[in-house]
Length: 306
Figure 1 (cartoon, rainbow, N blue to C red):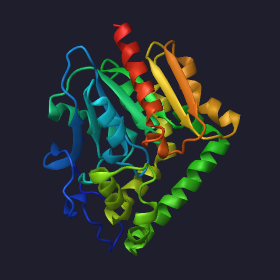
Figure 2: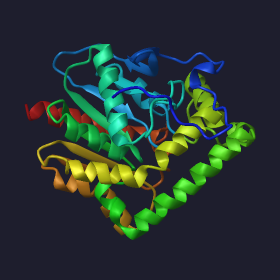
Figure 3: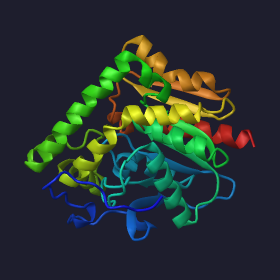
Figure 4: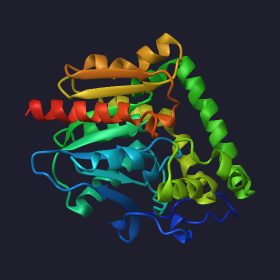
């Protein structure tokens, strides 16, 4: 994908993530002619095991997976990263849709020399990005974990589309609020719903406050319905692909059934709901064991299917 200057609102200067003061964990990796993505890789390479790749949800960064990544690091190699314009990564060419995001991830993996099998873990909106990657490079992807996500096929439902449009309005409000430093003022109270600590917590607060992060996050979120159409055009997950779904909260039964549908279609499917967890706290210290169980299940099923 050729790099082109990102389009910004007239007269608006959006800070790039690289201008922020706090040095990020991990490394900055050149994926396209000097454009860099921040990546955190933990765990030692193991030839018999896939690389677990985390894809954050809307407004999310690599920091969201810090606790899960630390737990798994002793037994499997994992990778978390900030998408273009988010967290500490440089902005990328527009549109920031699922196909562009999948291409960026492929470029990142290539730059790192990661050519082996993958298990993709997508939180929330990232289900569409994971589906786009898995169906574009099916030989690479050996398993998928969806965390409190909305499958691409569900985005055509009127109630789900209304939810997405409401989320887009909130994202636009956050984008505007960040320019007036409202998100910076709110960051200490609202910036970390996961429940992180240490450097990951600081990174989460910086992202929450950042006008650049909010701008590019809102740009992504605004394409959610289009992303769903892209993913549906590519097709459904292979029924032979091990797939786990972990959901949070006590939403209406039809919503939970909708979220779990990809696992029901898989011949090696797994679904679990954590009633006391929240959408973000599912990745936090109290509930993250459910995510770890799902990843362990998919990795084991992927190895068994070889």
